[in-house]
Amino acid sequence: MLFAAAQAGAARPEWIDGALALMGQSQAALVELLAGFEVHACTDVTGFGLLGHLGEMVQASRRVDPQLTVALEAAAVPALEGALELLGLGFASSLAPANASALALLEGPIQWVDSCAPDGVSRRAQEGLLIDPQTSGPLLVALPGSQAPEALQTLRGAGFPQAAVIGRVAGA
Image (tube, rainbow, N blue to C red; front, side, top):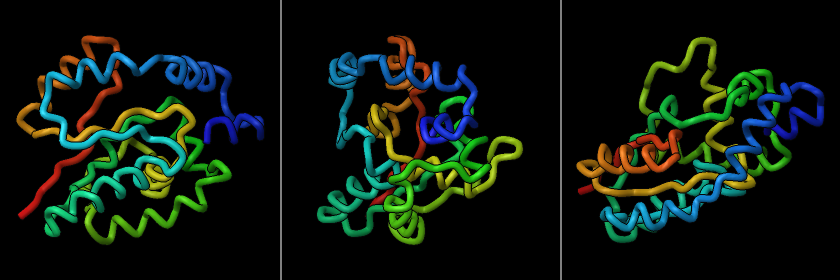
């Protein structure tokens, strides 16, 4: 979405520079770092956006546990600088409309946790972030909640400061 906004002359150069710097950071080290944890599922977030990929993980897991749900804290999802502002103004990538069908997941197995959005950020902007396709997206990892604090400390200490807990899984 940042690049779509840049084509329209609406994205600040420093926002694009920040996106390119993050996209250029190799994630190869993450696999080795995560090997020390009990990872239940992992995928890279790409063209289907975060919500689309999370939906695929949930759907696969519900074959084993039909009661499985995810409480998603959308305000905890890291966003590149300028992204929420531009989403709030209505900017979107060309693939975002196709990904919008994933928003229906918020009515089912993925529950939106009401949380405080950053000042001036609308739910529309947060939803736009969830369905924004990524060219070089982050990893989405499911691991036991008890391991989350140590995993975050490990990832952040290894140069991945944007690592965050964005949801909680519950099952039968």
